[in-house]
Every structure is written in structure tokens, then in C-alpha cells.
Image (tube, rainbow, N blue to C red; front, side, top):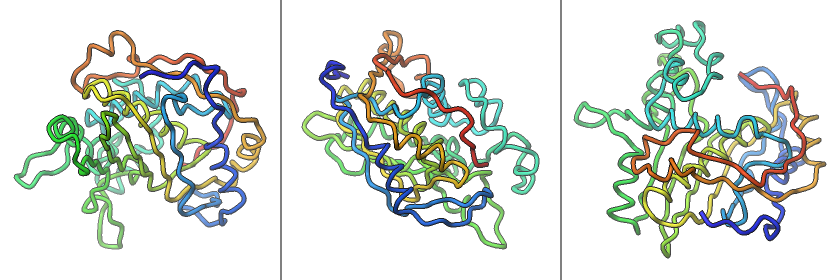
Length: 299
């Protein structure tokens, strides 16, 4: 990826504006997680030309976590659904969603998010012939063979596993919130649109921005098309009531230039999307506002 020199990049305020839009236009509604949520249904789209910097937020410092978000996506791509599998990718934060209580309600072993979770959907989608289907493997094949198609699509949503009614038992401890992807190749550039069903904007969305923009860099590496735009759209964008003070603090911080994220020299040897790991990415030019500890996470 060829970024503009840091001093030539325009400061970016799209994430800050998203927070402001929710706080000023959203409606307070109850949530399953406990706290009410200020919700904006159909939030403003964020568009990032990667030349102007990588979408790692600067309203607070997430330098200690950004690589973990990429590791999580690598785990999903490789089909991880259990806590033991996530640990191999450096992910140790899924415990609250894989508790005995949550798993037993769905007839799952403790520590298993279920076949309807991200890893199951991305890597082991049930196929019509009784086998399984690897969505990311096929995405790469299709881009290489038919780059101009409009059908480079990935979905994390298997309705048979996730539909909720009184007579059905879900096959996932958490319904996928992100990961509806469409790739477009135009004029030798590859672009990625990410639609997010539901987004905890102060906590979850910054990680999702990082991991799917990193995916665009992976696809650039594997397909040979230059990375173009990363587009992020959150349908149900929300800020929980106990996050409001932190959200306003971020809104009141000035916009800053976005950093540089590149694939390392070892990462540039990779030709199979399943082989990427968090350590294959490095960050520079990252000068964010101070970190904000203690923002509550809804479980």
C-alpha cells in the first residue's frame, strides 16, 4: 500500500462524526445487554481512501489492541469457534460469550461459540452436498478468475442457526454483528465495503474498522490489485448509556491524521489468506489522543 506522506494526509473526523450523530440523533432503547442504548438506525457511512491513512481511530489510543483485532479476524478466517482455538491466534477476550450459562442454553460445550458464529460461517458454511464451504478461500479464487464481477460477497449470517423464536435453539452464543463484505475491483484497484448489522461504536466498531481494513491489505497482497477504498456502514449504531460520558469526551477531541499500517516483510511472502497472523502487520505514524480506560463493555 502506497500511503501519502504523513504530513500530507488530511485529518480525518469520520469516526468522531459518527459518535456525534448517534449522541444527537439517536433514540434511547432497551437492550438485551442491560444498559439502554442510544441507537441510530442507519448511521452515516464512513469512507476511507487508504492513501490518506489506515482507519485506526485517533480519538483515543488503541495502540495496545489494534493488532489483536487483526488476530481475531485471522482466527475467524481459519474457522475458530472455541476459546482454545482463539488462544492460538492471541485472542483471550471471548470468555464472557462462551460461559457455561450461555453455552448450555444452546446445547454447546462450555467454551464453544457454536457453528453459527463467525468462524463457522466464514470457514465451514454447510454446503448443499453435505460438506462445508470456505467463503474466504472461494472469495480469493473468484477475484482472481473473474475480477470484474459484482458478486464477490461474504456473509456471516446463517439464518437456520441464528433465527430466534420460542421453539428454536440457536447455534451461536452471539449473533454475528459484523462481516457482511462485498469486494469490487475497478480500474486495477480493489475496494472493500463492510456492512455491519450492529455496532457498539465506542468499543467494538474501532476494532472492526481495523480488522476489515487489514483484510483489504491482505487481499491487495494476494490478488495483486492495489488497495483503494475501505467503506464501513453500521446499520444499528449504538452507544450504551454507561458509555455516553466517554463518547462525548471523544467527540470533543480534535481530529488527527490517520496512521500507516503495512504488511511486514514476512507477511509479504504469504499467498494463502489462511496464513496471515497479527504479527504480519506493523503500525507507524500513530499519534492519537490519550487512551481512555474503563469504558464499559456490554456482554
